[in-house]
Image (cartoon, rainbow over the protein chains, first blue to last red):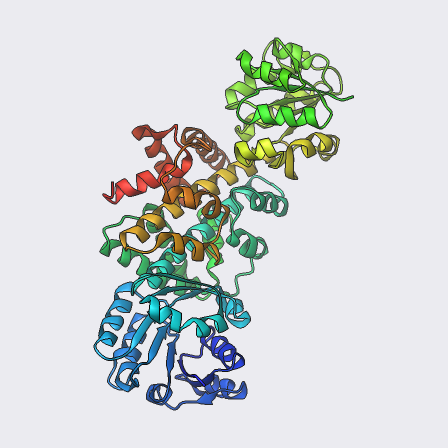
Amino acid sequence: MTTVGFIGLGIMGGPMAANLVKAGFDVIGYNRSQPAVDKLVGQGGKAAGSVADAVRDADVVITMLPDSPDVEHVALGDDGVLANAKPGLLYIDCSTIKPDTARTVAEQAAKQDVRVLDAPVSGGEQGAIDGALSIMVGGDAEAFDAARDVFDAVGKTVVHVGKAGSGQTVKAANQLIVAGTLELVAESIVFLEAHGVDTDAALSVLGGGLAGSTILERKGPGMLKRQFNPGFRTELHHKDLGIVQAAAREAGVTLPLGAAVSQLVAALVARGDGALDHSALLKLAEELSGRR
Amino acid sequence: MTTVGFIGLGIMGGPMAANLVKAGFDVIGYNRSQPAVDKLVGQGGKAAGSVADAVRDADVVITMLPDSPDVEHVALGDDGVLANAKPGLLYIDCSTIKPDTARTVAEQAAKQDVRVLDAPVSGGEQGAIDGALSIMVGGDAEAFDAARDVFDAVGKTVVHVGKAGSGQTVKAANQLIVAGTLELVAESIVFLEAHGVDTDAALSVLGGGLAGSTILERKGPGMLKRQFNPGFRTELHHKDLGIVQAAAREAGVTLPLGAAVSQLVAALVARGDGALDHSALLKLAEELSGRR
C-alpha cells in the first residue's frame, strides 16, 4: 500500500488528503495547528507530529502551503522533506509558488534519489472537496506517470505541461487570466447598471456569446448580489500576481493588462478588502465610478 | 405572409437574410453594391433598388450596417426607413452602434406609428450562417414579443435586456469583455512561450479551470498557430471600443482595464494590422516583449 505524507491540511490540503484516504492511500498528515490533523484522523488518516514524521516512511509526499518561503522551509529546511526522504521518494508540491523556487527544489532533490513535481491546482475549495481540481504539472514525464494514481484521486483535469517549474508558470498565467476576467466582468456590471440595463438578462446573453467565461458563469450571479464571502481571498490573489510579475520580468515579458489588473487587486487589498473573495474587484470598480 | 425589408447584405446581413427566406419570410433586400442583392435573389429573396423600395411594403424592416452614421442616414434620412414606413412597421436595427443613436432613432419613430428595437448580435459570420447568433435586444417588451419569429430565424440566444438603447449597451459590454479576454490570453501565450512551457497542454488545462472562456476555446488554438485571418476585423473592434468609451463617459463610469485594452487595440490598428482578426493582439503582445 502506498504511504502518502501530506503536509499542509488547510482549506485545500484538508479535502485533498481526505480524498486520498477515500481512494485507498495510507495517508499520514501534518499541519501546524492540530485540529486539521485530528480531522484527518477522524476521516481515516494518521497523525504526524512533525514534517519529519510525515516524510520518514512515505513513498509520496505532498505539500500544500501558502507561499514560496513556506515551501523552501519545509522542502529544504534542516529537518524538512529532503532531509528525511527515503530513497526513491516522489515529492509533489501543490502550493502556488514562484517558478524559480520550484526549480530550486527540483535541483536540490536531483542531488539525492528524490523525484519532484510542481503541481499547483485550480478549482477552489469546492474542487478540492469534489476531487475535481485542475492540476498543472511540471517535472519529468516519468515522475508524472508515477504520480498518476495520486493525481486521479484529487483532480479531474491533470496535464503535464513541461519541465520543472512549468506547472507554476501555467498557474501564474491562470491567475493572470482569472484576475483580468474578474475585473472585466466587474467593469461591465458597473457600466450596465449605470445605463439601467437588466443585468440578469444581460449576463445570460453575454455568457452565450464570445464574451462567455467560467468566471461569468460561476462568479457573475454572486457579484450581482454583492456576495463576496470567499471563495478565494483577494490577498492570496495579490500574492499570486506578485509571482506573475516577477516571472514575467525574469523572462523579459511585458504584461500591459496584467500590470493594470495587478494594481487594481493591490488597491483592493490596500483599502482593507484582502479577506474578501477576489470578485470583490466589483467594489473597487463601483468606487472608481462614484457608485457606492 | 410577413414581408421583411432587409438593408445591408454584408458578411453578417447576407446570411441572416438567407435564413429569413428559409424560415418562410418574404424577404426584399437592399445593399449598396449589387452582387449581394443578386445573391439573395438566388437564395429566394427579392431585389430592392433603394432603401425606399425595401421599406415601402414591409411589415418588418431590418438594418445591418457598419456604424452609427450609416444607421442615422438610413433610418432618419430624407428617403430612409421612417420616411417610407407604413403604419405599424416593426423596425429592428441589428447594427452595432452608439446607444444614444439607438435611443434617438427610437424617439423619432415614436412620433409616428413605428416600433423600434435595437438588436445587435454576437457570434460572427459562422453564427450568422448557422442561424445561431446571440442577440441582445433593447426596446418595448411588446415589440420584442412581436419580433420573436424573426429573431428565432436568425438567433439562438435572444434576450430582452431593457428599454431602447439597452441592446447596444450590452453589446458594448460584450466587446469590452471580448477585447480584454483576447489580450489576457495573448499576454499569457507570450509569457508561457517565453518560459518554454508546452502551450497546447497549458491551454487545455487553463480551459478546464476558472480561467476557461469561449475566447480561449475558440481563439486559443488559432493564436498558437498565428492564424489571424478574420473572423472579426480589428478595425471594427476598434470602432466598437470607441462606442464603449463614449457610453462609459456619458454614464460617468470609469473602465480602467477597458481603457488599457482600447489603447492596445488602437496600437494594433495604428501599426497597420486593422484588417486582421482581433486575436492578432498576440502580434502586438509579442512585439512588446521583443519576441518577433
